[in-house]
Amino acid sequence: MSDAKQPAILGVGVVVEQNDKFLVVQENQGNKALAKVKLSFSFPSGKVNPEEHPHDAAVREVYEETGYKIKVNSIIGFYLIKGALGIAYKADVTAEVGGGNIDTDIKKVLWMDADAIMKSAMRPANKQVLKDYRAGKSYPLAIISDNR
Image (cartoon, rainbow, N blue to C red; front, side, top):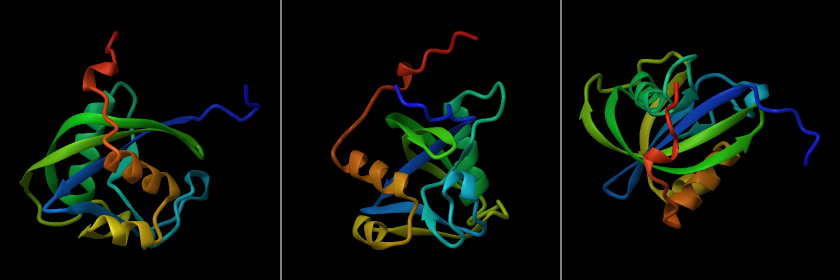
């Protein structure tokens, strides 16, 4: 067992692929506690609110950060990152409502191909998520039992 502190935050990130490109956001602000660097790229992501199901948080975060409505399909994996435990989801766009970012923490919303993502200034966990996604890692949504 590691002596590392237990993460205080549960977070979600969402991989959306469409026409061989991935939905990403450019961070407008940094957060050292979560290894977030200003102007770096990431998949839409954020914290799970108290009493919120992680699946619902994934849908909410994508909408808040990009203006897209999504349907989560599966879980790519679970990631212990600096300051948080993250759940990465695979999702499909169901509608573009706002046509752009809504959240002030986001500078820009764009679609990038996998090679560009791997060469970009992106949070390290996001690159691992992309590798796992491309390797076909997938878990059913029901792996998270809601026993509230």
